[in-house]
Amino acid sequence: MTEFLLRLFVKHHRDTENPAVRTAIGKFAGFVGIVCNTLLFACKLAVGLLCGSVSILADAVNNLTDVSSSVVTLFGFRLSGRPADKDHPYGHARYEYLSALAVSVIVLLLGGELVVSSVGKIVSPAAVRYSAVTYAVLAVSILVKLWMCLSVRKLGRTIRSAALFATSVDSRNDVIATSVVLLCGMLESVFGWNIDGWAGLAVALFIIYSGVMLAKDTVSMLLGKRADEELVQKIKELISSDCMFLGMHDLMVHDYGPGQCFASVHVEVDPDESLLECHEHIDAAERKALAELRVHLVIHCDPTERGEQV
Image (cartoon, rainbow, N blue to C red; front, side, top):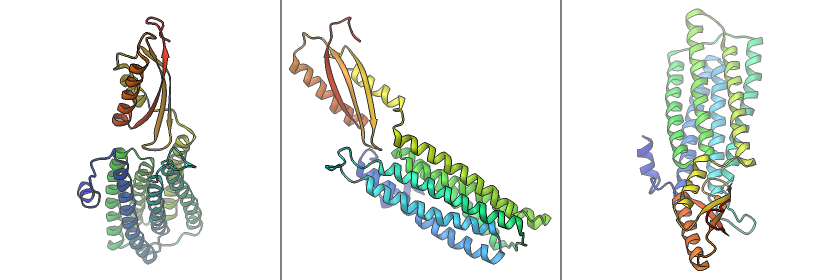
């Protein structure tokens, strides 16, 4: 299904190294989230009001918040796709990290609201009237959210997107939350246990925990997370593949958002080599790093005698 929709709405969707395609995939994910969550909110709101369940209403509000999260993701990708300018010479790709952080904040606010409403239902319990329609809506919701979780996570891995990873985690939480609500409804119908408020509280606490973890990961990237070891190794292998370079040191990698990775390194060369030839090799390595690794690499040349590499 996801592959079919990508072919339908995103041109050249397999060319994920293309910034324009990457942005289009992010926007596609945001649009799908808006449509699906709006429909789920409307259905759950209706059945929640009809049966008087605070846990179902809380789940409906959760989906409404997911609509807001999808809108944030959509605009995050739109802003992150803007080119570099005078004030932002390294581009605007970190907007995507900010959108992921905004999703985390929305999740935390939702969790807080659900705690309050659930505690109120625990203090003042009321009977809940479940029906076949109620169970059907919750079951369909679980299937839809499971599909969203798996598809968005796949897209997140494909384009290496923190915002889509955050959205996939949120969808996974929704699967768990709605499953808890459905299970509690079945238990109440069979055994007469009034645990609607407790179910809502459990869902709320789980949502808060997930929001904290999402915020922690996103803030880490904004503060300057350590470079990915696999990328560092690939840069070293690229440098080492040129026999002109005798060694290297002081490799530094800076992440300015997805697709905006900058790095600098000192390479050691024989002082007897032609300066012009060294320059040609350096230019070739920098072009190769950009083409193969999407890294804007700057190489500094250090004359070093053979056997004296740093």
